[in-house]
Structures are given as structure tokens and as C-alpha cells.
Image 1 (tube, rainbow, N blue to C red):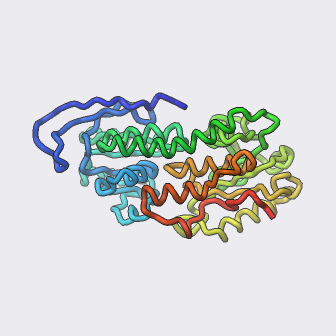
Image 2 (tube, rainbow, N blue to C red; image 1 turned 90 degrees about the horizontal axis):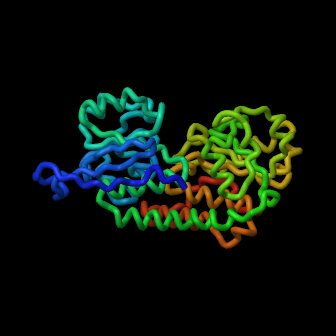
Image 3 (cartoon, helix red, strand yellow; image 1 turned 120 degrees about the vertical axis):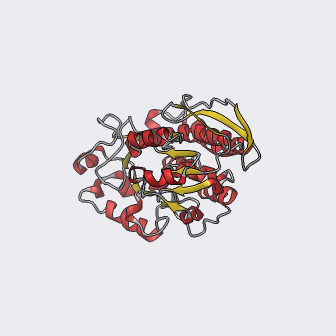
Length: 347
């Protein structure tokens, strides 16, 4: 697991006046996902968040009241959708409105998902910006620690890390010794495209490997290579996983019917009836939102159970999903389905 996001816990006393929380105006410094050391106020009263995983963790830590505005992709828990919107996503963020809100902290995505000139505008105004995208467990865990420090919720953050990390460790410990010839070949359909996949430079690849699979596209160039369907047929993957974007479903999460329709569409592609994954029914649909935030560990458990049902016979990803939603968001998931089929039985 990467260690470059280790938190630097520096408490720096400033002016003696008390904040609304009763804290003297203290600062803490963290190293964000891009490796920047950023100093921010302890327990910032107003936060603007453009990173869904961060708003989710802030809510899970009990500090959603500090979130004054969000991008529209910050949808978990659903109560956040009542917050002021400052754009569809980071690229479309209304920087002028952010400046008007005068937050003590802005949390943004990495790279071009939040243009550098936006950050310059904010920092020139005295607003610190920390960046996280969080597409893998090795970036989720440091972010939880960072936010726990910033919000003075270290104990709650450690409990969250232990809970989520414990399930992640189950996957890693059980798959580490699987021989290469015991790993199923996997084709990952990225971001709602049948012909987009994931090379070894992508987090999609890491997820497949850690769950005990063999990514058929690992040697292709670029993070998200585009391939011909004929090539996929020739590779004859034993498992197909399709990442379903929010543009392909109507609600907060996809319905079983929407996912089954997409699954049938994939299995009916010309020539796909020759592929082992289709013959055995091992074609899975995953809500793209499962690839980030606290439910990323649930995603990992599903992958592991799909790839190695016997090895993970005692693991119930749905139960873990329910545990996380109930523990951190006081939500039931009876009507929430973000993968299909959930079972490893295909008949």
C-alpha cells in the first residue's frame, strides 16, 4: 500500500480567539493525494467539497453540517443533495460562488478534474485547497486519516479505517497465494464503454489483481485503452465486469432492471456467445460509484467472490454493504442495488 499520503500532524497555534467550536484558532497540515503539504484550519466551519468520497467520509464522521456547498456528483448520503450546488463536477465548479461563500477549506479532485487555475484563484484569496480523487483503497485510507485530523475526529477516523481496512485485508490475505493458473482471466469494460478497458497503469487493473484475477488488457498502452471487440473474443475472458456510469440510469443508483438490460446487451454482442464469461454467465454490472468512497471495499469483496467463490464462500458483500450504510449513514439498503448479479450462482 502506498505511504506517500502519510499525515503530518502539525498543530500550530495562531491568534487566541475562539472559533465557533470552542477551539483556539489552530492549524493542521496534511499531505494530500497529489503529495502537496497543505495547512488548513482545525475544524473548519465552512467546507466546499468537490470530491464525492470526501463529502461521504465527512458525513460518516458526523460533520456534514460543515459542508456548505458541493458539486452535484456528491450524492452520498442522499441528504447531501439538499446542500447548495456549485456545479455538476469539479471542472464546472463556480469558482466565483465559492469565493462568495468564503469557506475555510475547499476539497477538490486531482489533476484536470479541478483545473490548476481554479486552485490558484482560491489560494490567492487565502482559501486552502486539498486534493483527493480516491479511486482505490490505498488513497481512501490516508484521506480518512487526513479528514479525521482536520475535523478533530481521529478516534472516529481510526475506527472507520479499522472497519473498512479489515475487510480489505481479508481480500489481500486470501488472494496473495493464488497461483497464476488459478486466476480467472478478466475483461473490464470501463466507464460505460464496451471497448474501453483498463491497462496495468489504472486503478481498475489494481482492483482485478488484488481480487485474484488476471487482467487481459494489462499489457496495453495507456490507462484506458480502446480495443476491438474481435480482440476481446480472441482473448476469451472467463469474467467480464462492466462499469455503469450515472448517465445510464435514472435514480441515485441503478435499478436491477437497468443493470439486467445492460448485461443482456453485453452478452448479445456479436461473437460474444463464444466467450467463456458469457457461456457461464459470469458477466457483472457494477455501478461506477462503487469504485470510490467507503463502498469501494464492498466492490473489492464482490470482485473477490466473483473470481473465487469457493475461497470467499463465507463472505457476504451485501451484508458488508448494509453494515457500512447503517453504521455511517443510518440508511437501509433494501432497495439499493449497485451490482448485478450479486450472487455467484448463474442459473
